[in-house]
Image (tube, rainbow over the protein chains, first blue to last red):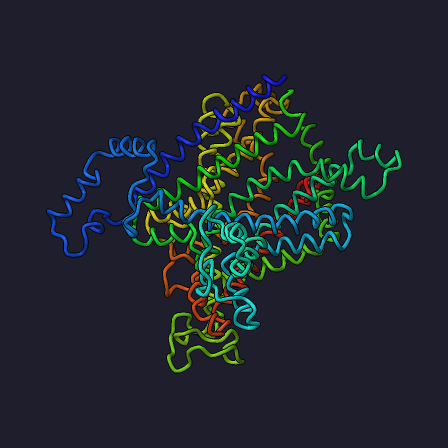
Length: 340
Length: 295
């Protein structure tokens, strides 16, 4: 039985390989098609034809596309994503230094969203068809209909301009604080590790508005999936048995129904994570958040294709990895999977 | 002949049943009725908007820049003195066109690909599934950004990018619906009666996939609008001075910290209402099409 499960997990990992290969090909092709000539950009405005050609040769851009692709894969295998033209740094280093900012924002937003959406879904599922149910539906639909960039701007207007309670929407930390010593790159964790609570609060204050913006957007799928899974769990035989055995309402609802309903919710979280990463790009632009999303937007403007490629690749790989982890965790948690 | 009279006799009660069902769902769910009314409003704006608006959406008037909403300018004026109300209404046509065109493209391509994969299976199915997995492996907005950046900054390319990221949803849906009916009794009967594979697939099996497709279309229209507006917001796609909701929010964002809220809020609100309409509509259609899947 254990070997069955191990085989299944290995099989699932093998399934991810062609997807990874496809991701590498697509990100290569997309960025080679970017308009503008990186050689001309890299050589500077005063460059002559000859020096542009020289740079082109140095970058390997004069070779046929297929050969460029294999060079690229070879570099990739060594963890070399090329050099970003705009910052002059290796792309891998740029991404690594900016990724924690994006992840911190995304994870806090998802936690916040789960904390609101799961109780909301349970509430709607226990009262299907009532005004509570309808209200929940309208609320979450309104949340997902709000363009994240618009929500962000409205929040800035209300909490920064009108009420003056939020700090200015410029990055992860106000100028008056020094960033905490980097351990994980997550300001909240690093500041807590350093015991610097003033900075911790400063970082939290900057984080609240963008995190709420993202969380509003992700409420709907989580709340809906919770509602649907709860409805299904509540109508199943084991709940009827539990009720007949005289277990309390809370015990039945949270001890049995919710625990069973959480599995599909966890699967949904994978999908939600994907479009949160996408929406991140917009939120980071609105709040001048120094994550990988704003990095990519800046790189797109100057056709800096090593940077764009690195970003697209990093996002896709992150997502493939996350889905893999979720599927494997699922197989480990749920005893029903792996027997069929 | 006997067969004809039989269907004729059966048809009216069945249609009544459907109508009654739709009526019932609408009465049960006033929200869906509201969604239909709002859809009518947006379609009206798209068709007649440019004729009805009080000002030219591109006409600047420097003397009256950044005026707050008033009786004369319902939504105020922007930094160049253009009437925000006129721009918001005129933009409806462009935004709806982008989303409808994108969804139509993904509907067509997704149906063909999914139908083939579901009907013939085998290597077509395997290859298609791997390709769709690859597309789905990207955060969709990020892929759309990449596609627009690669193809160039035009409205058509926003449409193509939005279509590409939506194709997997349709292809998978059609594939599943076709696959379960591939060897159903009516499909075998149609083949026995001498119909070719293509005809059986297109005329007999595919129509069964339409109801769930309609739900998907409605939800996707909202997504497509959000996607297009998001791309314009980061400077890809539609360019100023063209009135478009996303770009108007982006331009207005610069004035929000100094308190001129009407530049960004009204286009954003309109954008949100449009997406909200399509999302509610999708929910309502799902109730009509498949009551069990209600969430």
